[in-house]
Length: 348
Image (cartoon, rainbow, N blue to C red; front, top):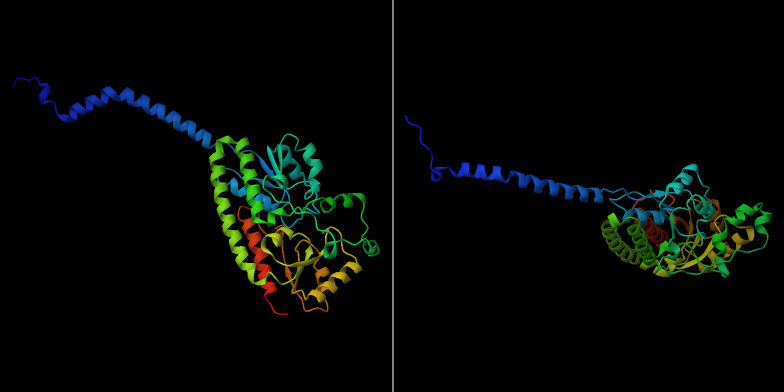
């Protein structure tokens, strides 16, 4: 049978398609290579390493961790149940400061132990004192009445002499402002804004992520603020005594009634006269509760409670008992509100 030539009109659509694809293959491969290069560039940018960030204490570490979520994890200096008032630097802390690109702290009035290490070990880092963040409201240190430390010699008589180094660590009590400003959620939001700005400037590849995380954090803080106000509203007029004067911002925001503190400086044990005065204050005001703190000696609370109808509770303003991380700030603030409500709602 003779072989016939196929007319172009008789070529099947499938064969024509294969021929067209074959002729366009170089163009498709080139376009694919271009798109792949663009994708690889985007992935490189998105997967760029985050800067080494070090944070001094748990409450502000929580804010930084929330804003860095999905990008990186900040390192924490004061870990576990330690207090910044009595903290001693570890070798691991020194190594973290040496490698840090950014260091967030409240300021020398709170973390006095960090002042010299930041001048030496952290000299190459951007150091941000969040007490000075735009929008942070500062309240002056309280003086007079139940918040005034008495220079009556009781501390020395009780055997609580202090050397020059210990006295230097009391600098936060000699400062102009109370340093526990994170206990007002509005201040926490102002700090978060400064944290985002600092991170975005140092790490523009992740600026969008930092912004999104900060917006999410702001919304959570607003909800927290409303919840705390509702929790403490029924008991806010009932007076109570705290271990040391760390709650002024919480008091200022929510109108709770702090009647006094056992000590102004948590590093200095109060003398007998001071304890006697606080005991009298509890009886006079009919204070419902006296709150200890987990980092400090609880027996002092028992001394001032003796012979009164007041009950004891625990508050943790520096989150010593909580696990560090982005949720810690919310646990800390809710914990204070719930502890107040639980103790102060009890009938004496």
